[in-house]
Image (cartoon, rainbow, N blue to C red; front, side):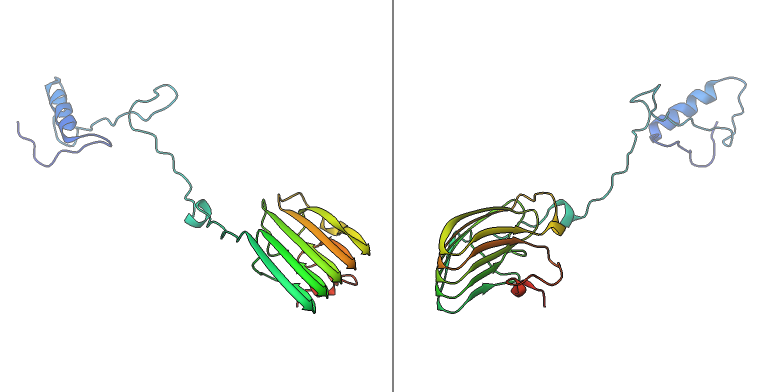
Length: 207
């Protein structure tokens, strides 16, 4: 018996499987053998009672942006650098390029270094400063570990923390060795916008 029209197949069926199912159906007695009566049975959907049977289960996965999955590596720093000033101040603010180890030599003047946009979480920067007459002042972002050594003949060595900027450690570390004859060696922890800085730190204000 020749049936007109193209056969219909269920989800996941091949043409060979559909023809075999049609032959078995036609061989069964007392069946309506019209083309409209034939309905192939689709394979079962996998479930707790039939694991691994039927169609594979497709679980949609959230797409991850390329920039989030593969962050760009930070540029490597140079190993060492020197900043020399005879008469005048040495000042670095904003996003400036700092070396892994920076040596500052100053005869008459202050040394002011702002590392808030420079030091990265998880890295260590070393600064060694030699000054005859002048202060050494360094600003770091909140959460930075600070190790200060050195000394001064006429002056103070201090580390200041802003109580308003209490955050968890970021893994960043500053090792400062400051030597001055007449002057102070100070490190201050401050956020990007802490209002009007106290006296002696006005140079850190954002303009």
